[in-house]
Image 1: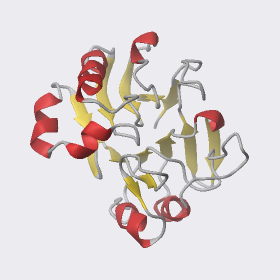
Image 2: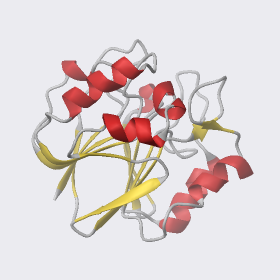
Image 3: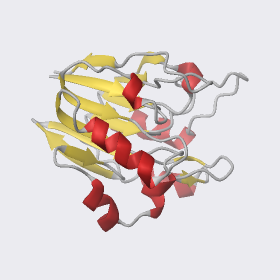
Image 4: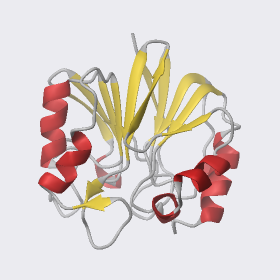
Length: 209
């Protein structure tokens, strides 16, 4: 089984040509301005991609997905697409959990204060999770900004250390895209755009056994 991993397309999804695969995962920031219209355009594109299963979470730009009710969002999601928001799905024995939450920075969507408030979300992650999909990185892992600051979530690092998922997929920090094996987890910053919001990267393809 393989996973096609992308993140941070920021409305530029139509500039991508994705390969076929088993599971397509988008780790948030599907929009730039966070509007309903942008979400609909993304979903129209996402549903046509040549992958058997399609999963996405929101990111800090995706304001509509934070403000809309569960019913409104459910009405928008086409058949064959799974939206995860502190929730999970099992595909062919593979347990996948997704959360859009990131540490608070100004007044973006799905922000929580560091410490106990954000830890409540990581406490929801099942211990049996194989693939963790979050928007922001754990602290110290592919989280360095162009200023040199490491801005990932400390409590998320603790959660990954405890849960030991096979794979953790995220984005958010465009400039620290990459793959890093940390302890037992393959960590992937799958950001597609650069700091100027230009599409400069291709998806990662990960084999899962």
